[in-house]
Length: 289
Image (cartoon, rainbow, N blue to C red; front, side, top):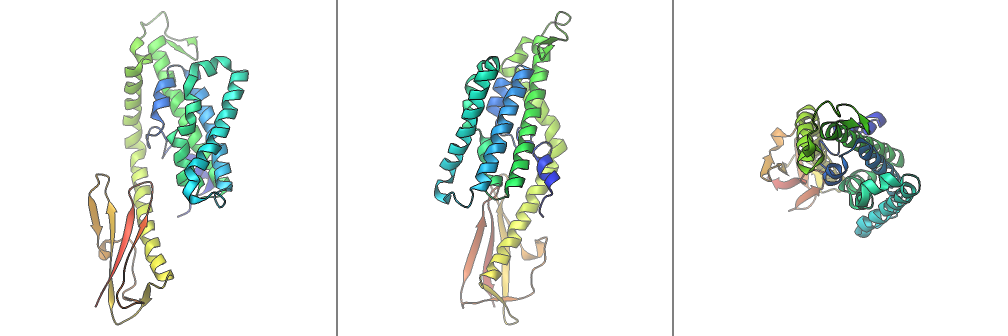
């Protein structure tokens, strides 16, 4: 089912938060979230690059050859990262120095590349822009919240303003690597039970949609024809999150299939594979008299 514009926009903020639910882009998030201002600066940079890259990649998706699409994506992303870095050096030199190498490393940030491949390459310019804004806001909020917690507990300040400084001895470890992993783990422990079920249902719905599409494709390509003379055994095959194969009989599929079909050729067997965010889903079609 096609998502509404509002669902696309809010998807990355809540249900598929790139850091807490999809667990992408964790390295820069942990590295820069020692101060709240760093979290906002990095978040806004990712938001701008992600939104602009999504727009350009979506606009050029019919022009970019499939065989070189990833290098093309990187060139587009690198262009916007360079612009953001030059603007930051000119107007926010202190923030640029604090974020350091993590600004140019946005080029290979898996959130940016992931949304280009999974969404912008398949959807309209407007939808891609909304997806970029939503994912960017989700990243910004997460990085800022993590940074605020770590700065408050580790330094007694928030955005440089004294809150508990001089009153409570700060936990210096919170602004070090172990503190980052601790806060990250706590936030994930809160987010996954809250939003993880929604994501799992969405992935299962995508699996069902892929199976239905595979069957429709077989019919559209005249690989299958309605007939009363023979039947077709149809089974879906998918990989579980643990990597184990799961076989779904026709009776177990959550959508109805025609009672009888025959192959347009005497003997034919076909498998249609679909690459999704999760492991691939296949529909295997074999004839039986």
